[in-house]
Amino acid sequence: MAPTRDDGRDGYLAFVENHQHRLLRAAYLICGNRHQAEDLLQDALLKLALRWSSVRDGDPSAYVRAILYRDSVSWWRRRRREWLSAAPPDQVAHDRDGALRLTMHDALGLLPPRQRAVLVLRYYEDLTEVATAEALGVTVGTVKSQCHAALRRLREVAPDLARDARPGRGPADLASGLEVNP
Image 1 (tube, helix red, strand yellow):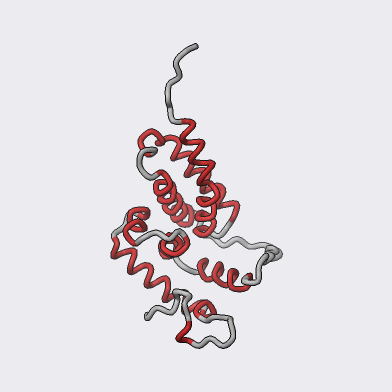
Image 2: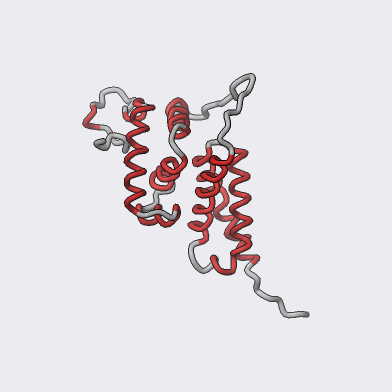
C-alpha cells in the first residue's frame, strides 16, 4: 500500500460540511438573492480550496466571509442594472414576523453594499468591530462610521423597524438596536 500524502482534502470537506449553511445565510443577507448567494458562496469556497493549505491553520470562515463580502461588492459594481419582470416574485412568510422580515430585507436592499456588509457582519454574524474591519479590509473607524450611517439610513427608510409591535410597550422599552442616537 502506497503512503498517502495529507493534502488537507478531508479537512476542507469537513469545514465546508460544517460551515456551508451559515456561510450561505451570510451570502444571502449580503446580496438578497438566493441564487446569487449560492453562486457567491460557490466561488468563495473554490477560492478557499485553492488556498486551503495556507488558510486552514488560521480562521478559514473569516477568510470565506471576506471573500463573500468583497465579491458581492464587485458583482454589484459590475452589474448595476435594473432587472424588470412582468410580475413580482411570490414570497411567503413562514412566521408571524414575516412583515418585519420583509421590511428589513427591503431596507437592507436600499443600503450601499459596504454599509450592508457592515450591518450583516456586526449584527447578523455578531462579529466585533475589529473582526468586521479585518473581514472587510478596512479600519475600525470605517466600520464605526459605516455602521452609524447605515443605522441612520435604516431609520429613515424603515421607521417601523425601530418600533416594537407588542402593545403596552413605550419608547423607553425599545431594544431593537435601531434606536441609537443619530
